[in-house]
Length: 177
Image 1 (cartoon, rainbow, N blue to C red):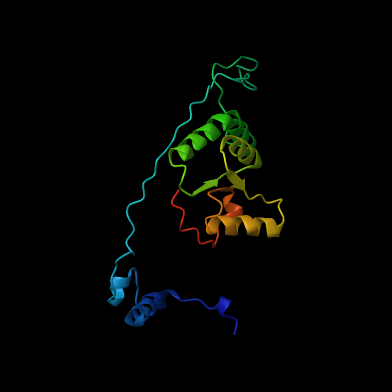
Image 2: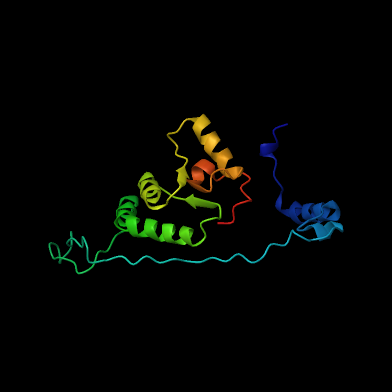
């Protein structure tokens, strides 16, 4: 039948879930089934935020509407449009790329996976990080595959790509950075 047309009527919702809970079992970790949790419980994730200072007095522009139209601004006040966000990101790209390179050089022997959002970020990161190999959307499938396999096997130590290219279904557990 056409199951997408099926629905639970209001009076049947609780009895339905009572029935499901009578036979269903939720498993959150191996010990729920009597096995050991060794190696399953991961250590706490450390999130380290790095802040790049931006000179907000550059390209301040002027007011475009209202009573203050034509008056110059003291600080740049970007809006939240995609265009403004990318303009802001472009203003700090060299400093952000230099910071990433500095962080990577603290542990040069570790495998590094560097995520970026845009092509101009990739270009800046490639220029700042020594020995990095990029996987770009415009590459052939064979070239992408070769580089991703090279990183997975350890032949490539530093891989630079976008999440929408290599963020799904790859086993990159050898890389903790």
